[in-house]
Image (cartoon, rainbow, N blue to C red; front, side, top):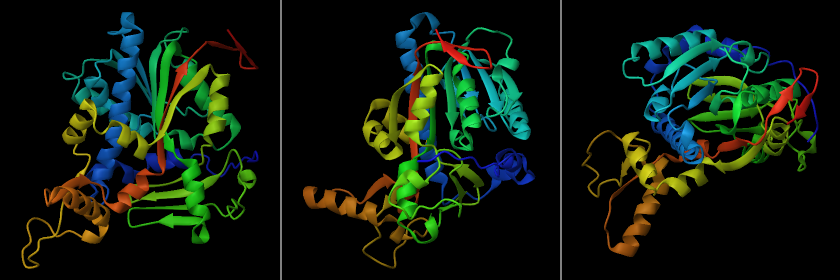
Length: 368
């Protein structure tokens, strides 16, 4: 890959998430992606629970003092996760001022139920420093969570580096930086093998910027930074994003005292955790998979809403395979539509641990 910058994004993300139509997303019809959104929330919930538990196991003296940095908090969609996780304090930050206000309102509306205190700051973590907002000069975060945000930071080296500094500078040694972002390798390969560098179905579409040439089999033509593509998700998200080349993320993270702990695509994370006690419980509680039943033998019989069975051929094949082995034992299963599964393959979850402190003098950095 080559190094490049592209200043065209600018404040697109801030402008988009501050726009008036964003205020009504909760009321939009999300039928096509309802279960996928729940599934993504399941991924987030399980990984958050996992790393909160790791913190408690590894640092029992901080079990009841966990301070979370919700980095790119949006409207506060993870507030319940912090409540369930029994954390002590959450610092909520987002670049969209309107989102931070809504996040704050939601917190105060349910404050009696919340078992943690909170601060709220509008802040662009690719350009500003969280240290200028905090009341301390010492590391105070135990967990930093950035969910579906990192791909906005990779416009250029400076913005990505600033983002990682914000993630790491006030994270205690032994603490974790976790999140979800784009599966860039999968995205590039699928778009490379598709007409007009575009992949889509009736749920999402991804189109690479014309300045990015994916026709070459080598990735050397793809810039390390500023590799721009346009992502649209069922009218819920419609905003430019940038590739996150994961080996590059690892190298940048090392500079800030962070070491990779894990990286898994959503499909693998699901397969590795769906049968665990917490995994099964949350799949059911969060309604993360859709109930699918084979079409009736009697074509005139229809129970429940009309279903487009062509979206669930994979589920029908699974049921038929089970029945071949166990003599017609089931007629239903829990799943996502094929279109939603295609979308989930484009994301990964990741985790880094803070290994050592880095002293910043805003000219250069030195390890301690």
